[in-house]
Length: 93
Image (cartoon, rainbow, N blue to C red; front, side, top):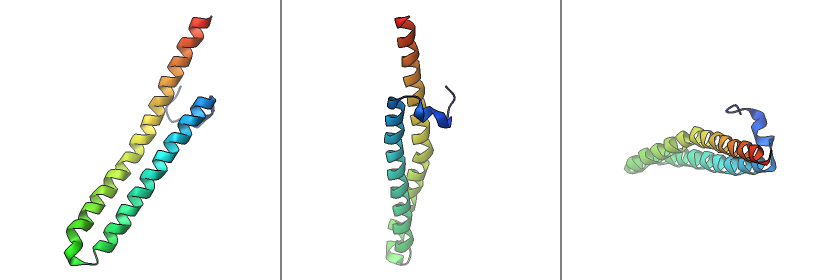
């Protein structure tokens, strides 16, 4: 199984469920990152909230860094699932 192959998500119903779960996590992280940057941007209009604004930008950056991590975790999950299917197939033969 190749990493990041578009067809991986359709290999089985289990693959489809895994894809959907990781996409929900990816979308939640995306929204949280965007929200953090928006809040941070508005806080920069007020000098007394500059430190809070910086922390919102740091948090947004961390969430953006999670995005590729989630995608990689999904692909590793696919590989683990594929190996289990291969082992089960060999045992039934």
